Length: 404
Image 1 (cartoon, rainbow, N blue to C red):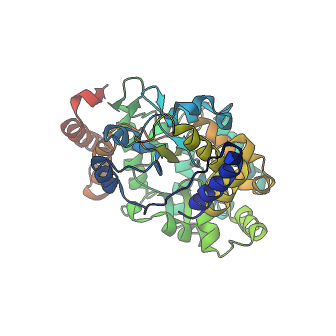
Image 2 (tube, rainbow, N blue to C red):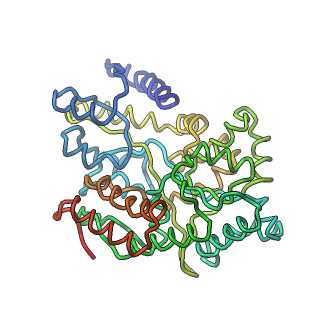
Image 3 (cartoon, rainbow, N blue to C red):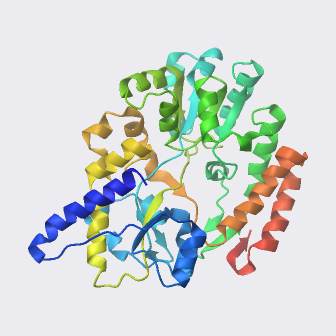
């Protein structure tokens, strides 16, 4: 658990100091970390942890399994005063808060500065690219063209890398939003075919390779450091992954110098001129177990609020490479010194996350079936879409699916 556990231990100390005047003390009993299957077994045995951490995507099935309870105090907590609307969407499910964001990330695209220089771009052109993406005057298609040119001119070996073929950032930019929050249903949209068309075109042009799914984040960092990868579609922590691989954990100034000389980052551009960029996240959430009653909840609330004390959030950022979640934490001098984190924190305002709907995992299995068909079986975009459509309708319950 690293910094997460350290933060709970420190939060326990701080809360107990406050509680001395009330003659109350809290004590955290630490259970071993377990997987989702074990969590379900714990629920069946009525032995659920009071507080645990899991992904934001897990709200739906955890609620259904009787693992968690609501935490509606989040809506009035001072910690989350003036929080971005995106947080509301992440922590809420079926009109209740069910989780507390423990950390945050976004999905900047990391681009090789050296490759752009090799394509004849000036320093000024490179440095203004992010502003052009923000303004909608540089599109996703133009980024694909740049990667294509970099590969064909042998400036890099690989055009695009991506942390996962399920990467939601590519869905968002093509308007392929696979979830309807109001109805709590997955959505089968014709826009999925646009995403498949991108995959097919990128494969034909050599921008992505058949083995793209095998280039995980660590491998992508290795390729990027060697100057062999044009662009990596990952999340915030990719910055920290490269720093670790370069052996610069204790040399922030040296790493920032390397980064400025070798890389730039932009949000995922819109496919349309004048469109808004997109960003994707998979934040960790703090959940409260179903066995916590209303009498115990105020103490659990105060413990969690201390975990989110500004200085503790930055301790976590330094160790994990994730973004802090509150504006107060972003004002910490240690955060302000880290230009990459400070400069891209604005992405949080429009960052979306994977839906907590229970059938999301099944839906995405069908979606990646289509991508795999393009990458490894020679299928066209329309063939991949038909395969996806058939599979998703067979496997996602009809009452959990909207067919557009």
